[in-house]
Image (cartoon, rainbow, N blue to C red; front, side):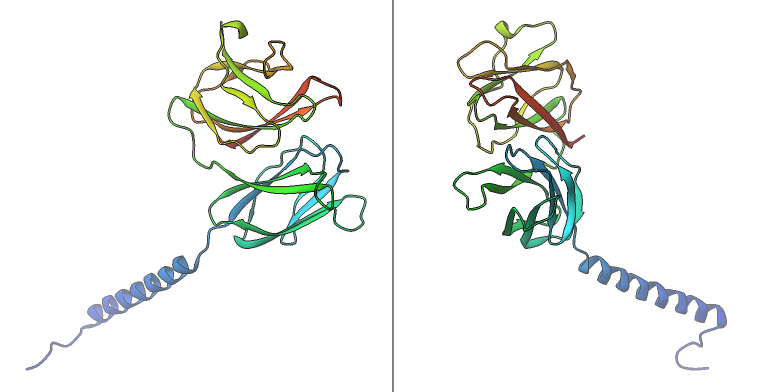
Length: 243
């Protein structure tokens, strides 16, 4: 016959399969196109005055019954351009603190950092920190130090290599003030001892056990006073941001 060739049964089957594949591909593209990555959020409690608290973000509980020194695991939440963060005492009552203007970007990692603030109406403050979410460079580790040791004041932080001494070490961070939000500091990975001293003094306020670092680690270190006296020992709480 003249004209277009007839489609045989096998050809009809192939055509139907091809059409179905195209339809599924287009549907998958639509699903991928509408997908929004979650945001990751954790809580770091550095408050001396707050009772045990619960913390919610846009109504979702992300931390329960925590106190000073707590650093929670990350929780996945929908991204938000104006996230509402509530801090409530676990014993009930009105919120101790409410904020409603924080941007929690899709695909990012954040720490909701609870601290005391005498100038704030509630006496507390939440700061949302941007956390590093990629591993440190090969053979390096990246640490961020949050100094909330109010009575100790500014501190120097050493990472003393195994086999060395504090006297021979150079501070990784010098004169770290209270209340700032520093960036991450990268250094060569090895086994180290973390030593923290008040700035200008050589007597340690804190000495860790040896820390074995092999590369890629990203950490956040919270520093707080252990006593409400001048130059007290400090306590250190370390959280894994990556690796």
